[in-house]
Length: 278
Ligand code: C2E
Ligand code: CA
Ligand code: CA
Ligand code: CA
Image (cartoon, rainbow, N blue to C red; front, side, top):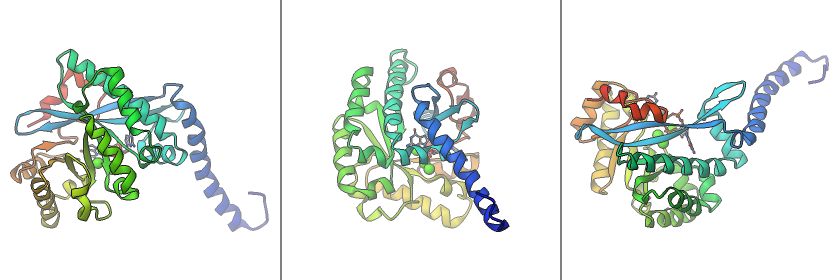
């Protein structure tokens, strides 16, 4: 801000200006990040606590910024959504994930589904089917080995275009899961209309699963899943107590630091994380 003689104004502008400039820098840099190969993907295991084996992996995006270090998805995903860059980023990610999972199959390492997070922007762009078809065709992966994670807010934002695109990808065998379930805006009334295979219990419920009120919610979600014949995965499982509580209520699919952090493909392949699992 120009020096105006009004201290308060200068102060205020400097603060806002500082924040805006990091965001604007990230926005500018994000445009080049894909072609400069600054993104990489980490994979977090989903563990089947009944069978004692991996049940799948969630692919999570990481950005290695040339001079800011690793920028968290909490910071860059919203920018990628605002700018629309999330669409080509998701296309790239689907291609990478399917290629890696196909290799895991071919090498006999894992025969599980890998999931990719979806943004409302991808549905708005009407390119989901094309992206998924391309990724499956070029990798040769079967559709059932890919899963898309959507949220209640995506489903609610534009029900008609979301449902029709989900239906088409499901026709290819692709699975769909409802992420952060229970935190969105009451899609419960229409949950039976959304084509999903799995509910993911949000980590906020799991975090406070020592509280009776949250236990009731978890038990409720597991009950809904059972009634609608859906799978249920608990997210953010960090302790053996949480795992035991979930298991005692019939939730056997677990994801969280207790079972394994998001890891590079080499680390996943080395399988060291399996030691932590119960
Ligand atoms: P999400 O989809 O709910 O992903 C789960 C987040 O919880 C991940 O954070 C994961 O690292 C973290 N997490 C997993 N287990 C635990 C645990 O036991 N304790 C705690 N405290 N955290 C745990 P991450 O990787 O930072 O991603 C944050 C969010 O960014 C994701 O939330 C997702 O909404 C978004 N995101 C990440 N990658 C992508 C992507 O490729 N596309 C889109 N559209 N969104 C993405
Ligand atoms: Ca997710
Ligand atoms: Ca989640
Ligand atoms: Ca989340």
